[in-house]
Length: 143
Image 1 (cartoon, rainbow, N blue to C red):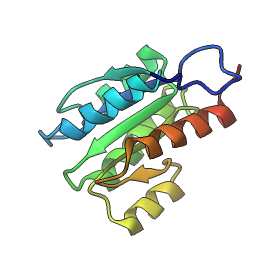
Image 2 (cartoon, one colour):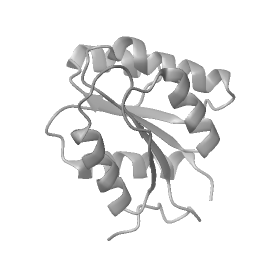
Image 3 (tube, rainbow, N blue to C red):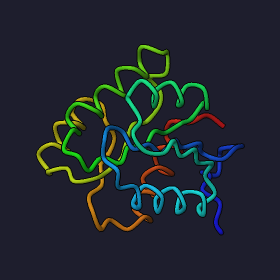
């Protein structure tokens, strides 16, 4: 097990993994959550059928650094921005909102233009996500 902590951080990176909407397939989200834990991150998995309001509230309550959404339903253009908006409204614009699922490349680019972090498609190695979160944390989190 490796430590997923940029050298200057005194604590593990905290990540909330969530499955918004009615999508009932969570195998990928569980694989990602396990990989992040194995990399030394603290992970909160909210389970299936979460609303954006539930996700943002949990992120604030758990004081996470990152929210990772797993979306396979096609509602990504609504759900990612809504979670981002709610985090801003609740005083947490500093939280990275990232994730993955079945998202066309052009939609990924549009979402990133709206302040969403890098998004990952099916088959992406979990190491890519871990590297991305670690690099983001090194640049954005205080020691």
